[in-house]
Length: 81
Image 1 (cartoon, rainbow, N blue to C red):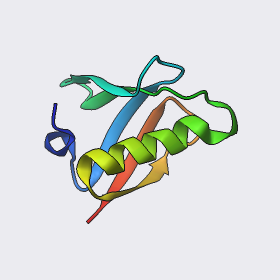
Image 2 (cartoon, rainbow, N blue to C red):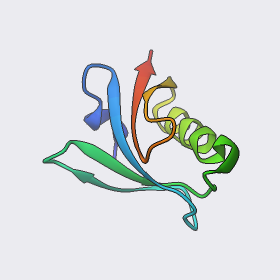
Image 3 (cartoon, one colour):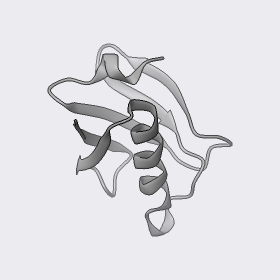
């Protein structure tokens, strides 16, 4: 699955599943336009957020930053060229 296909206006909508066995893309919901990503890190001390940014940046080879959702499972990332 290519994350680049799901970026709309330089933003990526994500639903995070923390504490997974491995970090991976699970699916894409075409109705809500949300990418579901499993994160192999706990939610405490922002470990899951840091892992999410690292994973998305590595896949896209671009920088990513949070627009909203730091304390929520639903997040919006801005992708910077």
